[in-house]
Image 1: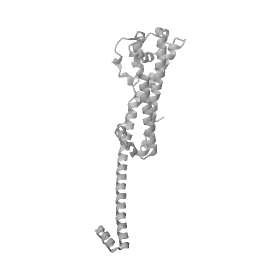
Image 2 (image 1 turned 45 degrees about the horizontal axis):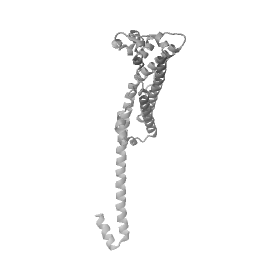
Image 3 (image 1 turned 135 degrees about the horizontal axis):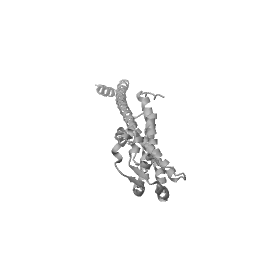
Image 4 (image 1 turned 120 degrees about the vertical axis):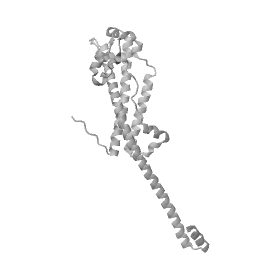
Amino acid sequence: MILQRIEAAFRRQDWKTLSKETGIVFLGAFLAIQLSNWNSWRSERVLEKTYIERLHKEVTDLETVRKFLNMEQVRAGTNLRRALTKLTSQQNTALTKAECYALANNPSFSNPNDNLPLLLELIPSGGLTIFKDEALREELGNFLSMRERAREGRAGTTSGMTGIDQNYPELFSIRGSVARNIDLVLLDRNRFFRSVPVTCDETAMRANQAFLNDLARLELDYTFHVLGNQAVSTALSNLHVVLDGIVGVRHQEPSS
């Protein structure tokens, strides 16, 4: 209808009417585009809210999973360091069962789980741009950066290393099941280590310079491995704080 009026005005050379009708057409098109853009923006914000709530839950769950493994890595690294210090000192201080077990068990260089399922979905398609909060995008970037460093560090550290317990089997003696009281790991670690049937030939260890050199390298590499995974956990914690602020969650402060 409006196109017919425009055509008729053009034929009559009624420029005033033509200008008015044309303006109406352009205004209608402009409003339609704006409405479409607003609907698109609104749909994207609804999707962003859904993603943020999902990401918050995934981050919370991942922190819980990583917490125990991070603590185990710190303990293993501490026992390696103490064992190395004792074996290379002149005081001949005896190893504890936990320190002997750390040597015989050769701490694993595996990284705790660092995957967030939502990111696995969004990253390949460039979907992270849906997040408009600058602090959130910054902490997401930091987490991904720390995660990549930890993964590269693990690959570089383990590329040429075999277990020290396998290289020097004559220095260790395991007689019985190590896992027979594995349930004590969470309940009573001291009892667990007292029950582990592992002994170390400390005299032979102190006299074996090749072993001590490899132990020093293992302790150094494992320290960097632990620090790398702690950096990932710290980045994850910082991401959690930002998400708490966005979704309006306040965690109860631990009682002193």
